[in-house]
Length: 107
Image 1 (cartoon, rainbow, N blue to C red):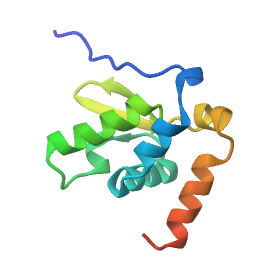
Image 2: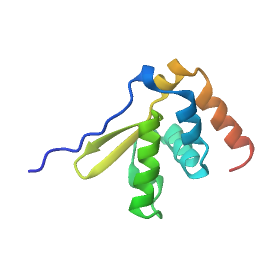
Image 3: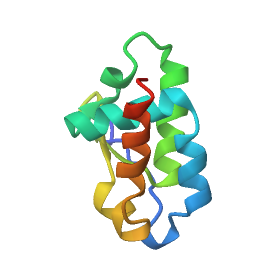
Image 4: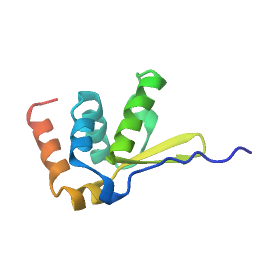
């Protein structure tokens, strides 16, 4: 049996505003964050079922590396959740503000 995949995540104190804002600046990634905020932890496939695997991997990796999401392997699945507590401790209200603005423009 092969070893489980592991993913590197920035420590909470290492999450920077410019990386988070860059990650949230792309509409596809912003939509992924909206889905995670609404549904909690999901399989990565659920964030972009119509996307090529390489595109999905690119966007979820960027969200992970910026500290916006936490990724873990579960068998063949790649489970992803929003790092709400970590983001709120670093930038209180940021995710709620961004997502409320996203909802207002009807995206």
